[in-house]
Image 1: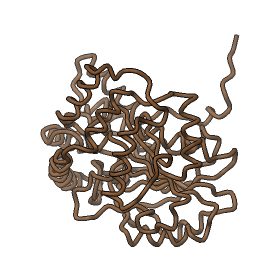
Image 2 (image 1 turned 90 degrees about the vertical axis):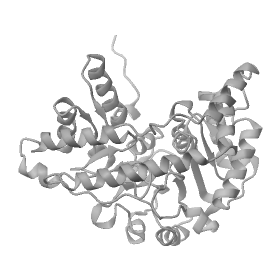
Image 3 (image 1 turned 60 degrees about the vertical axis):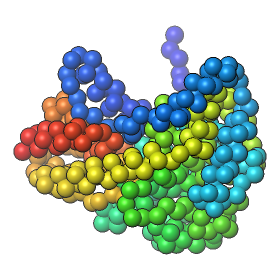
Image 4 (image 1 turned 180 degrees about the horizontal axis):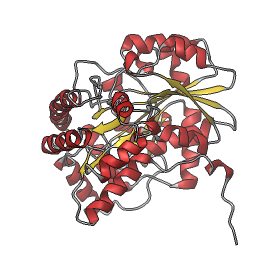
Length: 394
C-alpha cells in the first residue's frame, strides 16, 4: 500500500542547519573530528542558578501538567521583562509560553493565516520561516537584500511588496543569518509603511534581543511605533540569551484574540510547555543577567577575529555584524574562480567532507553564494577552522 501524504508537505524541506549538524555528528561517530560552525546555540553552559531552579522543581515534584499558556509566575515575569526592557505593557491574556520560540511562531502563523495569504519575509531569513508559512497554508513572499544594503530591506521595498493578499510581515533583528540590526530610524520608516496597510499583521522575532555586542541599541517595530500594538506579535524566548536551547521555552505577546487562538492550537498539539523548564526560565528572566554580558564580550572577540580572518581568504567578502553570533561571508568571487562548484550548497558539503568544517550554505537562508558561519564556538575552534578553510580554498 502506498500512503499519500498531505499536499502542504510537497514544498517542505528538512531544516538545513539541523541536517548539517546531523552530518557532522555522523562523521564524529566514525571517529572523524569535525569543527562545527553550523549550529546556532551558545557554547556556554546554562547559568548555575537556572539549573538549581530546575533541580528544585524536580525535588518539589513540580512535574505535572501546567496551564496550557504557561504558569502564572513565569507569565508575570515576562510581563515585567517587557516593561523593563521594551517599555511595553501586556495583560496576562496577551502572553503565551511555548515550547521554544519556534513553536510560538508556528502557532501564530496557524492562528492568523488562511490558504493563499501572503507573508512578507525579508531575505536573508531564518531557514524555517518559509516552510512554517507553507505548513500554515500561506504563501511566503521574499523581499531580497544583500551586503550592499547591509542585508536590510528598505521602506520602499516593503511598500512595493505589499499586495491585497498580504497578511503578515515578519522581521528578525538581530538577524539570523546576518547578525545585522535594524536601527530605530530604519524601523520607524518600515512602520510608517505598515501604518498605511492596516490589513498587515507584524510578527517580530526578537529571540536575539540581548545578544548585541556592538554599540547598536536594540529596538523592535513596536517600540518605535506603539500605534501598531493591536496588530503586532512579539516573539522571544530563553534559548539564546541564557544558553538554554535544549530547555525549549519561548513566549509570545500580542493581541488577546490572537494569543487565545494560539493557546487553543497549543492545547490540541503539545498541551503545556515543560513544567521544569518553565521554572528554570522563571529563574533566568528574574535572576542575575551577568551571564549575558559575559557571552557578549566573548562573542565580540570571536566576531572580530573571524571577520578579519575571512576577509583575508581569496575570493571572500564579509561585512561586519552587530549582534547574534553569525557571519555571512560572500564566496561569489571564489566560486567563479572554481567552476567545479556550481553553488554554495555544494561548497558547504565539501567544506564538511574535505576540510572537516561544518557550515551551512546561504541558499536556504535566501543568500545564494554565501556561507553562514556561527561563532558560538570557542576561539580555539575558530582559529583551527580558519586554518583548514585556508588550506581548502588555496
